[in-house]
Amino acid sequence: MRIIENSPESFRLEESSERLSAFLFTVAVILAIVIIARHLSPKQLINAFLFAGAAVFFRRKAQIKLDKAARHCEILRQDMWRQSDRSVPFENINDVQVEIMRPDTSVQIHSRLCLETSQGALPLTAGYRADLDRHIELREAMVDVIFSGRPRPAPLDAAKLLRAAGRPIAASMRA
Image (cartoon, rainbow, N blue to C red):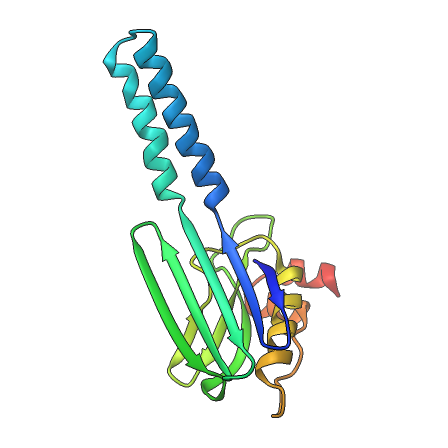
């Protein structure tokens, strides 16, 4: 997830896998052209269809816009075939959490941002990324925008997050 805009009017974040999808789709098209141009067996087109299918499968996008003037958060998520659009007023947001994936047997720590609202948790992205420190930085930037003019939640400690997620060795390495 990266910051697209941080102006007096709005704060925008975006995460996308469109480059990967575009690459896979390009490979599928090139494969199909080569197979057809060289009059190869039509069975070889299966590879092109697999690449095209992977391009659709890995298509994900999340856009988060924090409108500072209107004091609301717009979340647009697009996963494979479905698209969801939500709008949450800042008053309904209790906290911005960094959620660590469980169970995670990887050496890396996978996390994502999540809004804690009065209705429950609202993940900002579909997938997890191996970038805990970056997510904590983004969380602090979002908290600055959302909680301006009202009491803000306490800053997050990476070691405490890791201990709560059942990763005591990773937590002790950060302490």
